[in-house]
Image (tube, rainbow, N blue to C red; front, side, top):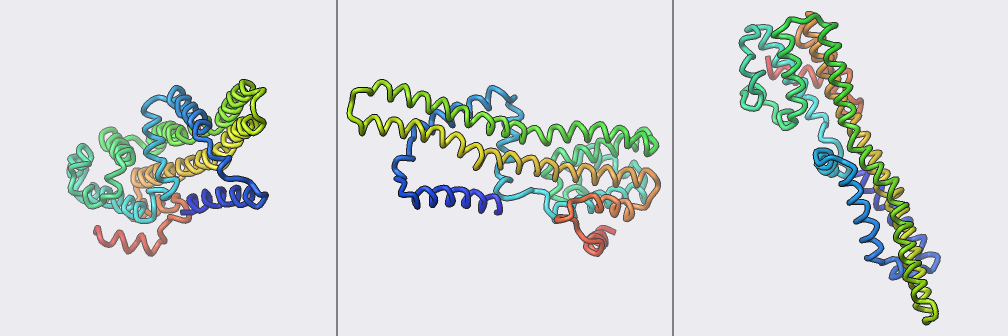
Length: 284
């Protein structure tokens, strides 16, 4: 909601300042300039990025308005899932969780945590790395090295959407200049005509430059920064899982392992010790 409020403040500030200076809003409505700038930016975005990254950007775009999907409820469920998995394997052995690990999306245990189950990447990261431990019995430091390498790659993938959008923001002022140059070309073709017509063409050309800069620094650039923050925020979930896994591999009890993961969550979304303790009581 803060992002939406920020967008409104940008629009209101620019428009009200323009109107206070006796500007004419009708002059700013240049649909063909918008077509040139936005169409060229979209085409450049599609050429520069693979289809998988384009889909990732589109899937993350609503979170710029709604906020991260990883809220306190998600993290409570994540820690509850980790605790339940560790507790079951501790009490009944690794064979008892084999079906849960191999088929998490049809598992009754995982089905108790629907918010986590909807995040396939998180589920696969948890099950893949826990499977490595159960099959190989690797010591904690070796498993941690494997997970660190994977998390480094995941971090790059999570930041890729923000980098792709940021490149569009950097290109928009240039496309605004393209629209302005084309407007000047049209203006030069009108030389000798009425001054009013020439003035309108010059105004349209200048609006192209304005729109390119306005879109870049007022909306697309900040959206890119927001996507970067979302990626950093989501990475905390992977670090939480890593901490929990390393703790249980090191011999700590499941409640202690869950607590070590809790401490790595974002402060604004981190459940308190009491909240986590009360949540885990439901799964004992």
